[in-house]
Image 1 (tube, helix red, strand yellow):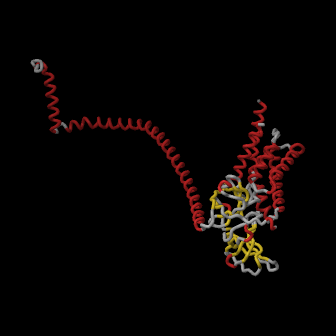
Image 2: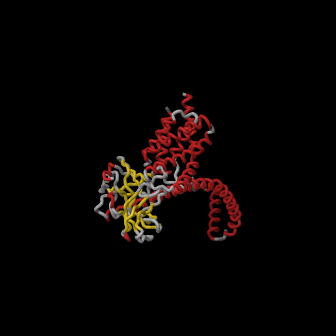
Image 3: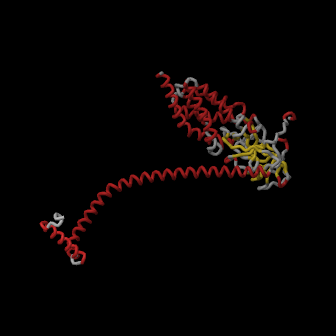
Length: 167
Length: 277
């Protein structure tokens, strides 16, 4: 339960930081997705048990803040969570490399998903511009932030479970 | 009385007379050379002694002064840092005041419109979407669909509202389309955003002579925006002979990356054209 009680305020704080700070820092037109990084870092930790609740909460927060059509963030985050579960259980168990790998995969997935949703809304989309000006810069920024986020949240989760085990 | 004039104390009387005599000679100047000879080595010795003593005293007292100076220096540094912070704060306040004065001037220049001033508090977390969050919502009279402007020109329109905040779809968003007019040539067009935040005018007749620098304003057609709000000016014209329409890239009137405060036009209700579509 501590995982949820501590995870939710961290996600809320990440959302505030994302909207107020990281949203302003742009590399070309790309930005970081701090919530995505938090959810990936939380999910890949082997001790986390209820990460799916946080994934849904993160998706709800982002859907509330963002104008993404069809609550897209919830579905995209859930897909990324499923992919992490699959990779973690069957293929890969090196968390730091997994973090970087899933960051790349997650960023690309969210970008493709967003472009798909915008296409359904008849938005004016130039895919080459999207790749050059948004997707690659966002990927770079997410990768830059992935390791600090992983280090911080890994420590938080380990602390939570050390406390729970001692109790 | 007899005790006071006791002649048996002659030694004392002689001594007094001797001292008085010496004093008399000294005051008369006869003893100067003698005194000089006696006092010079004494003064030198005293001077040397005092120098050494002062050196030793300084050795200890300077270190105390240094401690005091370091403390004072630290305090002054703190004061300087505090004052610099205050200067930065005041500069920020001044910038905000400049923006608000500009918005106020704009609002006064068009008294027919009613405005709700709002501060920009965030941007959409998705890099593909061009939306901003403002700190005024339905409590302040902000409703969905209301146009949002600054003193420089059109910003966008309200997309979603909560009690104390609202989300504004910028004219640079890829789903944004606005009916506009190129003022100098009186040509109707559609302003379209893109995922990179660039805006263009589309569907301009090939007969129209578009040139860089021409002003683009809202036309009011469609009833989604009031007329005559500046959108930007023509930057580059893209004219291909075989096509039906020409297009042009637009330099927006407002810099959307540094947007800090906006005005919501609260007395404008967008026309509901949904039943006609």
